[in-house]
Image 1 (cartoon, rainbow, N blue to C red):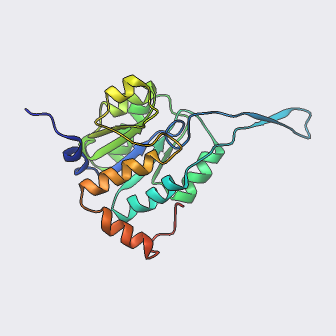
Image 2: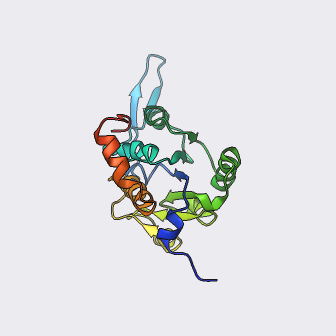
Image 3: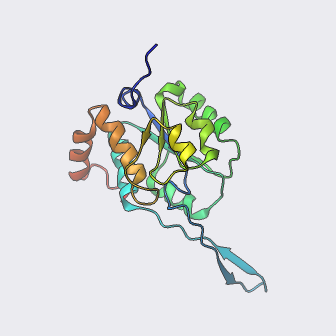
Length: 191
């Protein structure tokens, strides 16, 4: 049986799931201790997120894609951004990303072939190796890129998720219409 091209795989996608650190962010983790009144320090971990990715989530929604994140870390910043973007699925503190991926598929009632996963590091390989379209960001580890059907032109935190969304919607013939709807203001979420 011939191998399916990335574009052929992209045409079947209904759900786009992704990692956070290294995909929505540049992968750097900055920790800032902040003194509290209780004589101990609270650590704040700010995250830099791309407005292009946020707009991409709106475009995905306009193109009929559902979206969600699966990440190992817990972050209130990520939870806040996920609420702002109205992601359908937010899984934080997950060590078994494949189990979470399968749980989401079951909730959606779709096969793995109808889902894409965007990752950057080895913890993302299990869902990437079990989905219909695996996408690595430009700054992904080499073994992740080798397992990807598509590698984004931009790095994580610099619009890589937007690249993935654009690739899928163009393959499905929905990009132009989604952009027109977005420009008309049909979705102001995500920028």
